[in-house]
Length: 147
View 1: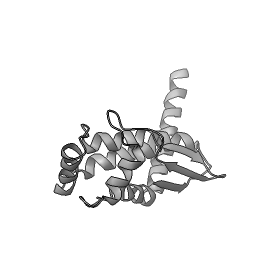
View 2: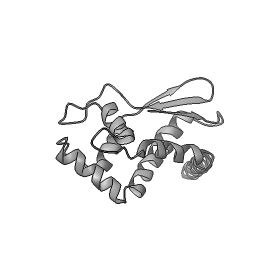
View 3: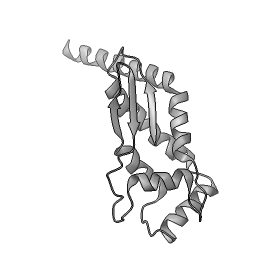
C-alpha cells in the first residue's frame, strides 16, 4: 500500500516524515490494537501461518522499513518495501500487509493500514504544526546553549 502526502515546502519535509509521520503511525498502532478482531488476527498469524511476531511488532517492522520518496516539489510517497521478508518466515512484508488489510479465504482483513493512512492524512496539518513548533523550540534551545 502507498500513502501520498502533500507536505509544505516551508521546512525539511523528509525529516518531518521520518521524525513525525512514521512515529505517529506507530502511535496509531499502539492505541488501536485493542479489540478482539486484532487478537483473532494475531492468533491466525501464530497458529496457522506460524509467525512468531505479534501484530504490533509486525506493523512496526512494516513502518520501519517503509520507502519514502519525493514525487515532486511538495508531494511525497510512502510505501511498503516489497523486497523484504518478515524475519524467520518466507512471507514478504507486502504479503503480510495485504493479508492484514484484505484477509484471505480463512480470515477477514482488518484494514489496519488503510485506517492508519487515513488517520495520518486527516491529521497532517496538526502534525506539521507540531513538527514546526518542536524544531523552533530545539533551535531556540541551541541558541541559548551557544550564548
